[in-house]
Image: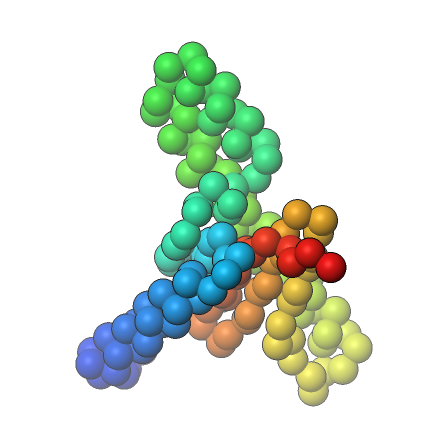
Length: 139
């Protein structure tokens, strides 16, 4: 915890909530996840959280649901989101390392990865990693 006043922390949290709310209303946005920059821990998710899971975890959750293993399905979904968060955190760390190797006075500001189906945008902050997944607009 920092030495900042509680009201300041609450206002910062409210501002983040407001920004996430506006972001999710934008066309094509599927989901967002906020990670702790230092540890990679999941702080908040919003939107269609199934977009934040790995394909492997979705397959495991589907298999578990067909066999009526509800706790196993939920566990697979949660594990998939944690796996996704870990991949994002590692991607940012590796990208940050690349930037530092190229120019020690530079810093990573935005990562954008586009596939045929979706785009993942990661905005690193000093405290957080904001990741947004949205549909890839048709060309």
